[in-house]
Image 1: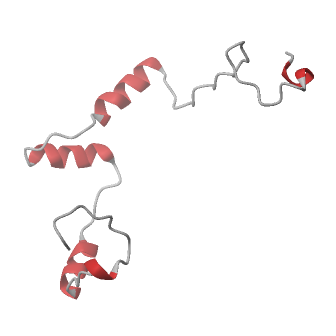
Image 2: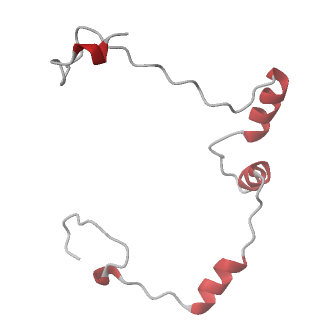
Length: 95
């Protein structure tokens, strides 16, 4: 590849890399915890700062009774500033 920026696509023949089978096997043998709190503890043990604090979030959610409900979407309203493509059909835009 040259020094200029290029886009890289999956299965691009210009950048094919051969990975040894023993490295693949070692990678697949690594078991990660499904609980994010355990992952954060491991990061802190290795002097790395986790991006989130799930333990604090869980305690706060239990204390406040917060559930992970999606926010309701706002209904779009038509104003005078709205560009109408079907201006010849005003009955479509009446409330």
